[in-house]
Image 1 (cartoon, rainbow, N blue to C red):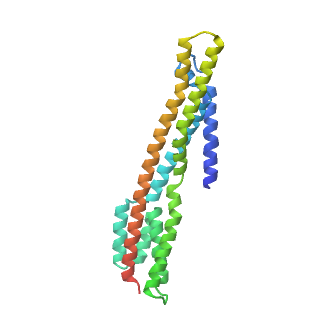
Image 2 (tube, rainbow, N blue to C red; image 1 turned 60 degrees about the vertical axis):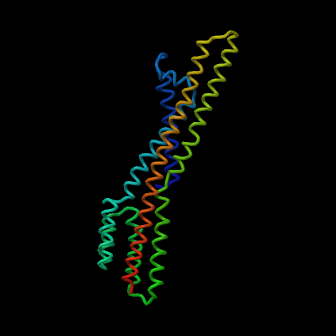
Image 3 (cartoon, helix red, strand yellow; image 1 turned 135 degrees about the vertical axis):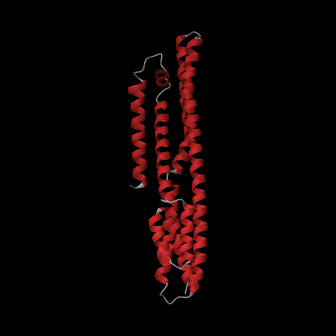
Length: 247
């Protein structure tokens, strides 16, 4: 599924679910319940719910994608087997190990090993062969990186705007509360405090969502940085080992 279609579907479904729950569940809740208090917080509560659904969707998607990108076996174990095959000069077994492992690292290394096999019988200078293998590995890395970093911008954007959305809901709620107070023509401390507390639900929801989004973004960024480092180190080691086997 293309990234644009996926994001559009997530956006539309999240807001559809958010507003449906807001009006059908919160809107029909008993007046003394917390759900009714959330309903009185205004439609921006529904927007925060939609953003929460989007964050949850992106977190699940990233967890599954990064797990798939790591491959079937633990990466250190896979690299040990891979380096052993390359050191033994058995590039065919190394390619087979990559096929069995799958994942981003395996795909990148496999592209370099396959190209090395193709060039074995070619009448090329050893330096040119290794430059070509390095080029293929770098090209494969550039193709895999967007897959690893997919949807991180969406998480970062939601983390940035969720607090603002919550504050906007609070400001709107405060305007409504003071407008109602002015219309009544007399001070109503109970009504005013109730209106303010309802408005602050937006701020609380926005801050909570921002915290979750930032933590998720930092977690995935750290995990991707670790995988990128491992990819760079593995590619470097494989190229150095292949250099000794090049004819």
